[in-house]
Amino acid sequence: MNEEKIEVEKSSGNIFRDLEIPAPEEHLAKCRLVFIIDDIITKRRLRRSKAAKILGIRKSELSDLSKGLFRAFSITDLFSMLEKLNHEIEVVVHQRPADTLPTKPHISTSTGNLRRDSVTGT
Image (cartoon, rainbow, N blue to C red; front, side, top):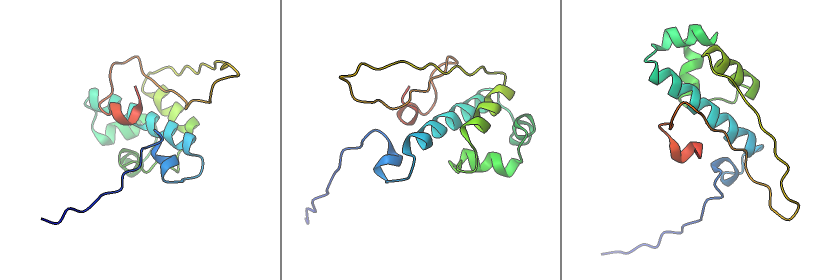
């Protein structure tokens, strides 16, 4: 049996940073928002065409979002979609103690656990 050694590198907690994608924190925040939107649509059992109509986007754009192709959408766009799904957005900013390292943005939902906990960080 040929035992091949596999090199393993510990994740930073942000796949976008690990892949050296520019603005990794923004990408992670957008990713989390997309998962929340997708989760709401799934829990409401909305057809894609109905969900796209509610969100004010084309069905193909909603399909792209569901596939993780969200670069064309801003965080403001995603906030707007959540508002169209009758959800409020609350942004809370805390000053961190001077002797601590910066943390990644935390996005959570009060609608219950998301289906993709490992990605959303909730």
